Length: 286
Image 1 (cartoon, rainbow, N blue to C red):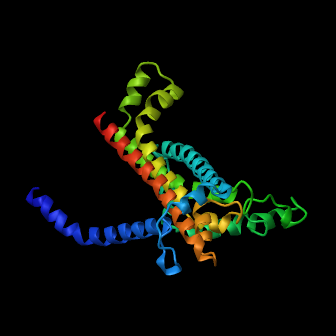
Image 2 (cartoon, one colour):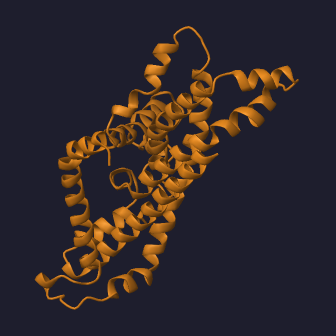
Image 3 (cartoon, rainbow, N blue to C red):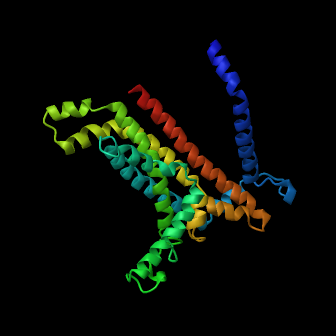
C-alpha cells in the first residue's frame, strides 16, 4: 500500500467503521432473528422454521411477484423515457439549460413527498378527478379511473417512473456527451440513415451504461417501502410492506418471519449488486 493509499484509508476509516458497524450489526441481528432466535420472547432454539413458514405461504410469493412486477415495469418505462429524453437534451436548442434544469429537478424531492403529490393528483378525490368533474367529463369525482390503491399499482409505477427517469436520463446524457458524435458522423458518411444510426450505433454504445443505471434503479425499487405503503393496496401488497406488517403485528412470534422476508429482500438486492459489479468488470475489459 502506497503512502497516498494509506492516507486515504485512514481518512475514510471513521466513516467506514460507522457504516460497517450499523450495516453489519443490523444484518447480523436480522439474520439471528430470522433463524427463530429471540430469547426475549422465549425463542432460544435457532432453526429455519421462519423461512419454512414464509416459503410455504402463498401471500409471500404473491408479494414477491408483485414487487418484481412493479420493479420491472417501472424500470422499463423509465429507461425508454430516459433514453429518449437524453437524446433530445444532447441537442442544442433555445432554452436547453432551463429544460435540463426542470428535467433533473425532482431528483432532490424525497420519495415520500412525491408519493403524497401523486396521491393528491391521481386519487379519485384528487386534482385530476375534480378537474374532470368540473369540466363535465365525469358525473362524479369517484367516476375517475382508480390509479391509487388499484389492482395494478398504477400510482406506484407512475411515482417510480417519475423519480427514475431523470436518474437514468442524466447518466445516459453523460454517456452520450462522452461518446461524442464521431461514430454517428462516420456511419452517416457510409450512408446510414437516422434510424440506423440510432439503432446500430448510438444504442449499442450507451447500452452498458444504461444497463448499470437500470440495475441500480431496479434494486432500489424492489426494496423500497414507503411508496407502495402510501399508494398501494394493503392486500395483496409488495414484499417490503408485507415484512413491515409482520414486524408490527401484535403477535411477536411473527417477527422471525418479518426478518426472514427482510433477508430475502437483502439477498435479491445483493445478487443484483454482484451482477452489476461483474458486468462493470466485464465491460471494463472490453
